[in-house]
Image (tube, rainbow, N blue to C red; front, side, top):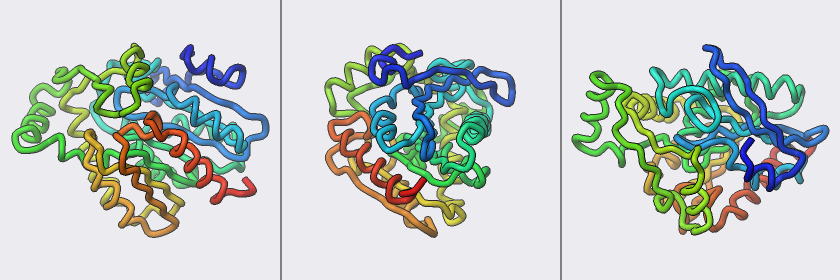
Length: 288
């Protein structure tokens, strides 16, 4: 259990583990409400964890929505080495495991996936693979395009490294000032021992390819989608969010937060972001 989550939401929060398809323990932070209208699965970004979303969960609990925060393999309290995968399908399978469990607990209720950064890539691919399990999608600062981090020789190094030294650690820092302008959130990130900046070539390449797949398959995504992004993003190329939105075929909404950084749910205007998410859910499923 994450102690800051316990103090924020009291007795409504619980911690449990699911078993992945290959036998790893996957940690879930769950904010439960009695007789939920619907359920939200949070898939966090690279190096962070699902226990950071207590403020969002509290907002949605007031609307009757249950929230689960997933720690994918190698993140938070889940098993596995930090940022070590062979294939992006491993992250996708972990999300599928959580969706299956959430669906069993909320039969007949809408299930929406909220993915942040790398988690948005996972969320899109999960919605495409399991359309019966996902009724809506929220992408926050999605990492569909990371070419801003792979300019020139950096891309060559990443792809060559993915072949020659796939699991070597090439970076380990997590800079709070690069993701949020909020001093309090910067302090919380810096003090959180479970937020980790480990980077390996294989993960970078798998994310790069998976993001491109999201853009290519966007026209097939026929569920309501909300995209929240900022043009001042230093982590991902924000133009990917616009490209994804432009290719969606159905109910779609995009909102640009012009004065924020990457981690919109932990920024100075985070209350506005959570309010927008809650309002979007109420509009799409008023009687859920």
